[in-house]
Length: 340
Image 1 (cartoon, rainbow, N blue to C red):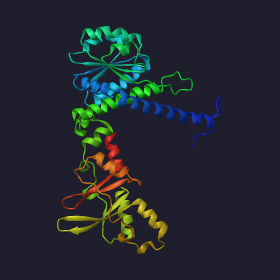
Image 2 (cartoon, rainbow, N blue to C red):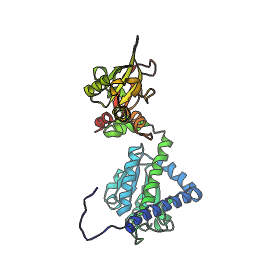
Image 3 (cartoon, rainbow, N blue to C red):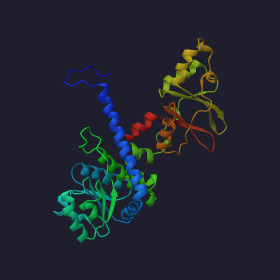
Image 4 (cartoon, one colour):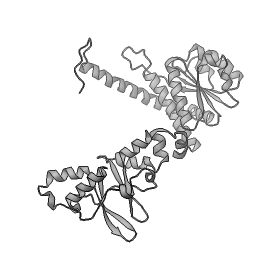
């Protein structure tokens, strides 16, 4: 809990309701744009995707808040397989347009459709034969009439309490940019492997490039007890390895087979429900059909298995699919650690 702070302003339920109202207003704006684009502007969407998919590069222009949204759109396009660069329209007229090459197309963002810097840029773009796509809040405008393709990003009102600050309009433009980027990924057949190649660092890259086998605990570091081991033996192994789990195994000629899995949580529940702990064995505590992952699975797959469930898991046993042999244990902490 946050400590009580004395100050000029006191936050009331009315202010919290204002938060909810903004969500509602912006969601409504997105729904309206979705209807408009798919019902009345579908041809423009198709034309925009055609130009962008076949362009060597996308040049993105905007001023103010629209310029900031344009920067994010350019970054998303670039990271998902479509080369893009955000340019300031004034700087473009002072030499930065030299980045353009034959076949590039331009994405212009403006709520009013009258942004002077963008209107002034149009003659240069036409002389360089660079096709233009407008994401515009006002279609009937100088930019609307000057762009080859126009995507209607109009909103009935801004979500801010004064109806002035760019809120709904910037959200609509941002989501429209995301939608174009996502559609281009499908057009280009952009795969998870392609994504990984562009995001080698950080958690995203780690999840898409490293396998469970490269991170898991195995060999002497693998916590395990034999089937039928006592409660005391289980506790000893948990303490020895300090991984928060123990695999219950049965020996076979080709290695150890997993027959159960015990976590710290299972131990705590046993303490709550059993008064004679010395009599307990693995058979009384273990999960007999635990969720498992294969050594060749990507870390992202293992993380999804642990997190996308009602009760999240902190560790998984690693089992060879072909032989059923226990190979190791992987924890969510291991995945996060290598992604840092």
